[in-house]
Length: 89
Image (cartoon, rainbow, N blue to C red):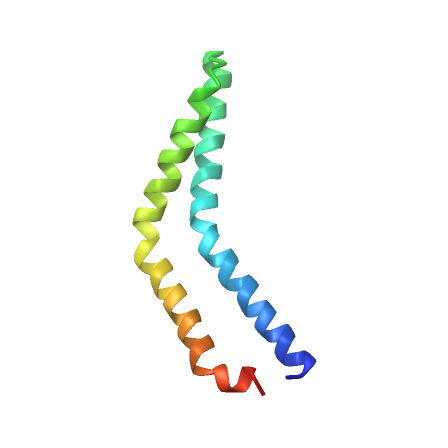
């Protein structure tokens, strides 16, 4: 196991983590911005109004992107398991 292998494995792990979290974070960000704009326009300062739409948006994005997320996780896991003999050398 050399340094290039470890760096490549770490980069692949970080890339996979970012790809797995991006849809939920993106939907939460857009929903938070829209709710904040709505609150600023209507002068509503209810704190619970910000949390419920974000939770629903993240849950909805998880439902929408679940097949792609599952494919990404299975691909990453199978790559690790297939190359396991190389990892322990």
